[in-house]
Each structure stands twice: as C-alpha cells, then as structure tokens.
Length: 123
Image 1: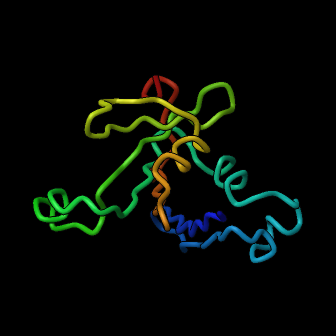
Image 2: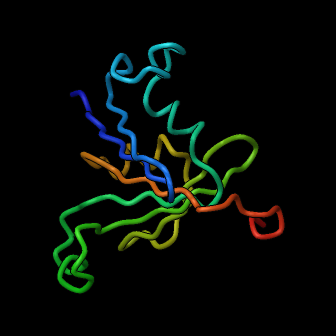
Image 3: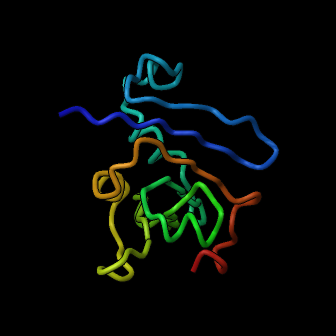
C-alpha cells in the first residue's frame, strides 16, 4: 500500500511551498534525488510545529480548528525528533519518519519559527 503525503511548509514572511511523494515534482528534490521526507528532515528546525488533520471530533468541536494534532520538532544530533501527545499513549518522542508513519496523515502543515531559537532557548 502506497502512502501519499502532501507537505505544505510555511514560514512567516515567506511563500509556502508544497512537496509531494513524487520527488520529481520539486526542483530541489529532483536535483538531489531525495525523497520528500528527507527534504523535510533537512528543513525543520527546533521549534518547528507540524499540524495534521485527523478525525477527532472532540478536538474539532472544542477548538473550532481543522487541525486535530500537533507535534513539535527538536533537532538532536542532526536528526529531527518529534514530541507529541496522543490519547492513551501520553507524551512520546520519535523520529520524523516514525511520527509520519504513526500519524499516517494525508497532509501535514509545517510552520517554522519566525526567528531561529537561541541555543539557550533550544535547550
């Protein structure tokens, strides 16, 4: 079974760009012959938020938001580690690839911090 991801990456003051599972659709991915997940892994920084739309009606009703889940990125040893919380599992820590596999979202929305965090704030 093939999984399709649509990544919409937004940064304050910048234009959003889209990555799809087919690397030939993005210039950078085509030039470097890397997958969209690998490209996303390179782009995220500590403090990046990853939102997804799920089927949790309670969250949708309470927040009046289309997003039902959020994870925060922490860069550790050149890897993107995602912290999030889910019902029944509590807070968890996992790699970006494992997070996307576990969440299995059809699309995600990625928001970078306006300014890079200082080393002190990152800690």
